[in-house]
Image (cartoon, rainbow, N blue to C red):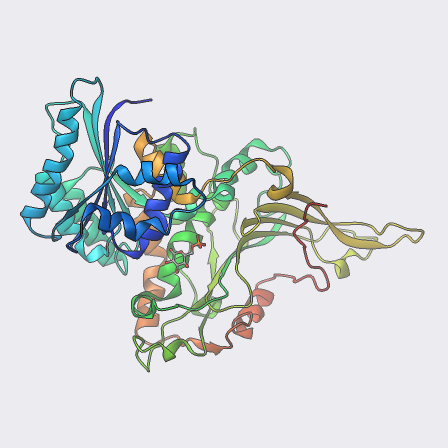
Length: 486
Ligand code: BG6
């Protein structure tokens, strides 16, 4: 591994994302020995006028499961610099603070590595990036690098996203920009490549000859919880489907990459995105939960969907005719994310399996990571009867001593290591927006209405009707139960 001074700068240090995700992820990396004191320095940057200790106090409560000693060692690594996001003074100060550590350690061999994490609203990305580019780059007189992590929303549609991409593209090259989609850091999302391409079981079955439909589902059992103001500007398609679920879709549907190199993988993702047909209005159901507009920051006439079910159709040799249902919703009956691959009926069935339900391969991303195959077996006993059962790989049981890393933890480590495999490339982002922009413009123009649904329900019943119409067969009377330790 590389050595040398590593400065990690969290911009927007007192915001929600930084407190809830970024600092805890850094702390986990620290605890596992990936961030060595002496080599690593962490800086928080924001507008508020607080001291180093002020920042430490603000984040302390979010750092869990640690001994007091570990915690204070970590907090000691953190310094705070205050400044605005568009004026030079703050960034000059920041640069001084970073350089001071670098030069005080200059007798050590190694690189100067500077990582900037933008935990900020995208409206300030251009000005902040300009400031970093002007005042805070790792000095070219020394080996090392400067990398910038940015997070969605990357614009609101194709046009605004491309504009943002060109603004950032003038300041940093693709190798310096890390567009985070935290779903790519989830254990079971990362497993998709291995599952699909290292198993003879799946290779011959993963196509239109055998698969009837695929669902990629995200459910939350709470509403927008105080984020209504942000959410109403974006809606569930921009918040979840166009990024998180579409990334999962890519990994489920793409062809085998030439190798595991980040460029090869992302080449395949771009190809499958470009093969997606335009979305038809009658293959979309939008919903809005009752009570959404009670949030004072949400306008009374809002048509913003908090639920959407969208059918994607892939125009290629592998997938023609197979619908991919991407479904996401807030304030539903449960909290989970899963991929459900439903197979066609076995032909010439002599067991009347149909009433049992179809074979399904389910990958449960969260909670309780698992994958299971629903299959028909003989019902144990004297009768020759069949029933639906499962082959179950539940991580909690199978990997009892393994702690599954948090998505952000993994992705920040990837950035330090310079591995862009799990980050979104510019052309990939563009292809993703190309799929959804016409639909989003139609929704914004009021051409599609969000149907009301009850908080705590499955969403609008029309969504289940749509799934049925495009060929999904729901199994009744079978519920997978996450197995627990005896
Ligand atoms: C974020 C969305 O990107 O993902 C949130 O903005 C959502 O609305 C969150 O709640 C879900 O992430 P996770 O990891 O909890 O599934």
